[in-house]
Structure formats: structure tokens, C-alpha cells
Image (cartoon, rainbow, N blue to C red; front, side, top):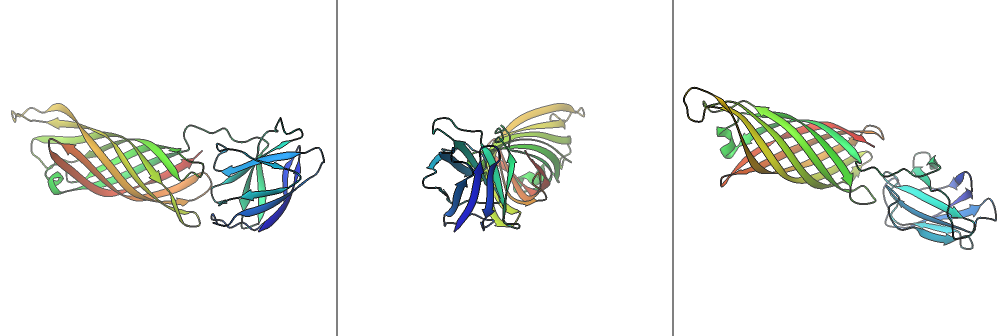
Length: 276
């Protein structure tokens, strides 16, 4: 497939025609560049969620730009121009809309990559199974999760999460059970439909248990704390409401390890993701 567009030292690209698929394709996409002035000798370009990869330089004597596996749902096209092949212009950032078959310029300069790519605010509910049923009847909580991309396509990402939970006790000697959870982990997003992703995640961290308990059974409850290691895993369904907001729903599992035994809880979390 060959598309044609013009370049301008001030205005960047003007795309004349294109027909990219909304999802990445195994076939390369060819764009034919026609500069509006003879002073432009070369351009260089790259594609991805952010311009963090190597630039591909193209002489204007062979004005064909090749995009490999361009995904118009997540990727942007970044282009710089040169009149002497030594100095380069600011980067122009473009996205492609398959519905209108048009390219859109977002700014004369590229975005500065931020440390955090997105932020999740979630509520969750968990039910104990196996040995955990002797401690809890159920657990309700809230979490704040920060995501940062580990690749140019925003598929692979790491995260850090902090959560608070509380649940009624199933024992006579504990009046209330609370916990603060801290974890880090990794996830990977798979497109399954327009605006819909499946995102498996796996995390590891610590859980600080906060109890109001009467361990010596003298009738007086005191504040008690102890720390466990934990593993958290989920299978997120993410639906893009807008470019900024995503709805997240996922089954959730938690394993925590204490004195040779394993506590197990399963449930569901749901929340909203804010993309920066």
C-alpha cells in the first residue's frame, strides 16, 4: 500500500490519501513523501507510542517512508526534517484515524515522555477460600495504581500499587481486621476489539495486617500488626471510554504467605484509568 503526503518546514505533513488498518498489520505500509520546497534534503522518522526508539533517515531522492506493523489505535508517527542532513527540525507528531482515513497533527513538537503513563483508581471485593475462611468473611478495599510503559507500543508495562482493605473477623478474639497492601508488578495488553483490551497482570509485594485483637484472651483488645509477603494476579478487561479515560473490570486473586501457610482470597475489582 502506498500513500502520498507533502512536507512543509513550518506545517509538517499534509497527508493526501491513506488506508491504514486500525490494528497493526504484518505487511509494511508505504508513504510517498513530496516536499513543498526543494530545500528539504532529508527526513527521519519513527513510530510508536513515544519517540524513544532509533530514527530512520530517508533521503528525498528516494521519498518513500516505510512503516512496519503500524497500529493506529496506539501508535503515532514522528517526523523531523533537515535542509543540510546535519541539523534537524523539531519533531512533528501524527495520528491516523481509520474512520476518516486522515492524519492529524497534534503539535509542532513531540510530547515529553512522563514518568507515569496512566493512573488507576479501583474498588475491590474479596472472599476468602481454604484456610482464610477462619479469619475473614469478606474483604472490601480501594487501590491506587500507577502504570509506566516498558516498550514503545505501550503493551508491556510495569506498575506500583498501594491499597487499603477492611473486613469483619470470623474469630472471637479479633474485633476488626484491616490491611495496607503495597505491590509492584508487570502486565501486557492484548487488543481483542476496537477500544477493548485484555490485560493480564502479576504483582508481588507486602501486606501489613492491622488488627484490634485480644490474643491473650484477657478481655482487653490491643492494636496488633504483622507483615506478610503477597502475590496478586488479575485479568483486566479495559474499555476505552475516551482517549483519556478507560473502564477497568477484572477478576482478582491474592495469595499471602504466613508461617508456612498460604492465605487465599478471590474476588473482583473495578475502576477508572486516567491516561496521561
